[in-house]
Image (cartoon, one colour):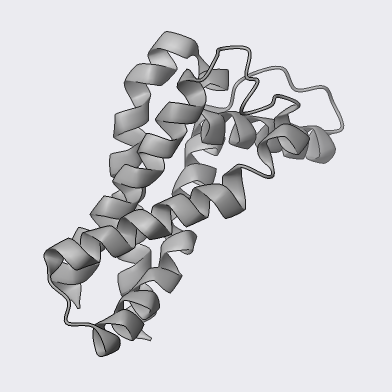
Length: 157
C-alpha cells in the first residue's frame, strides 16, 4: 500500500511543478490556452450548473486547480508499479527512470487529453483558435510531469 501513497505524493509534486510551468502561458492566452485547465473549467462549470440548476458563467479557479491536482496525483499511482516492473528487467539508473517518466507523460497526454479535449471543450487541439501553442505547451507540461515523476520515483523507490 505504501507504493500507492508514493505514487500519490510524486503525482502531487509533479502536477504542482507542471502547473507552475503553465502559469505564464495562462497569463498570456487565458484559460483556453491551457488545454487541461480549459477542460477542467468546462467540467467544473457544468457540475455547478447541475448542482445549482443555474447558468454558471464565472471561472472557478479553485475547482480548476483542484481537478488538475487530483487528476495528476491519481494518474501517477500506476507509475511506481511501472518503474518496479522495468527495474526488475533492466538495470535502472536515473536517466532510465527519467526516460520512462517521459514515455509515461506522453502516453498520458495521448490517452487522456488528446481524445477528450474537443468533446469536452468544443475546441480542436490541432486546429485550436490560438494556434499550435496550447498543444505544444500541453505536451511540454506532460513531459515535465513525466520527468519529475521519473526523478521522484527514482529517489523514493
